[in-house]
Length: 341
Image (cartoon, rainbow, N blue to C red; front, side, top):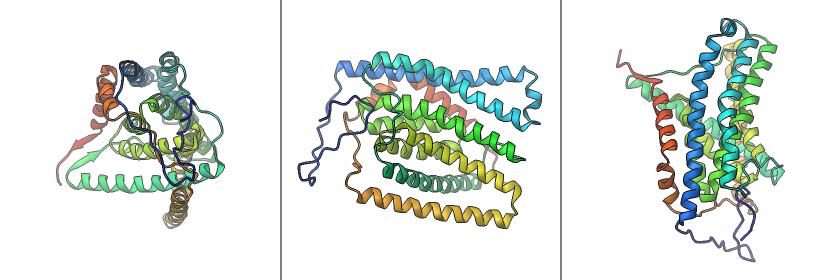
C-alpha cells in the first residue's frame, strides 16, 4: 500500500497479473481518528455557518450603499456585486478554515492543484459530467412538475439574461469563472480532501450534501447534489482539483450561454441549438462512460477505510449539525404549498 499522504488518488490494489483486486479490510476508528474527524467536522461546520453569516452580512452591507440602485439597472454593477459575493461569502470562512484543518491533518493534501494524472481521463471526465448535467436536469424537472401538480410552488432567483456581448462576458466572469474556482476550493478542496482520510464514499456524500444545500433552494439543491457526487468521484479519479474547476466552469458557462441565446435567437432556432448540443453532449457522455468501464487502468473503486463510524462522528459535531439544519431550513423556505387551482 502506498505511503502517499491523504488527498492523493487511491492506490489500485491488484495482483501481479491484474486479475484479482486485493481490497484492504475496513477497520474500526480508534480514539485518535475519532477526535481528528470530530475536529475537522467542527471546522467545516463553522465554515458553513460562516458562509451563512457572510451571505446575510454581504446583502445588508450592499443594501446600505449607493451601489444597490445600480444593481438592477447596470449589467456591469450587477455582475461585480455577484462576483464579490462569491469571494466574500465563501473565501473568508473557508479561507480561515484551511489553516485550521492543516493543524489537525498536517499530512493531508487539501488543494491538489497539479495537472490531472491523465489527459484522456480528464477529457472523459468532462463528457461524463455533461451527461450528468443533462440527467440531473431531467430529474429535477420531473420532480418540479410533480411538485407543482400536487400544489407546491418553488422559488428560485435567476440571473438576468445578458443584453449585450459585454454583458455576456461580465456574466461569464461572475457566474461561471469565479464560482468555479471559489466553490471548488471550498467543496472539492477543503471538504472533500479533508474527509477522504475517513473514506472516499463518506467524503463524497458529505461534501455533496453541503454543495447541494449551499445553493439555497429546493430546485438547485438536488441538481447540485447529484452533479456534486459525480464531480467528487471524477476529482478523485483524476487526482486533481482542476477537474472539478473545469466541470464547474463548463456547467455554469453552458447555462449562461443558453440564457444569452434565448435573448437573441428565435424560439425555433433556440430549441434546435439546445437539442443539438444536448444530443451531442449526451452521446459523448455515453462514450466516455463506456471508455471508463473498459479502460482497466482507470480504477473505479473508492478507498474504503471505515464502515459507519465516520457518519456518526460527523453528526456528533454540533457546528456541522446546526449548519445542515440551517441550510435545510433555507431551502425549505423556498417552497410553499399553494394548493390546487
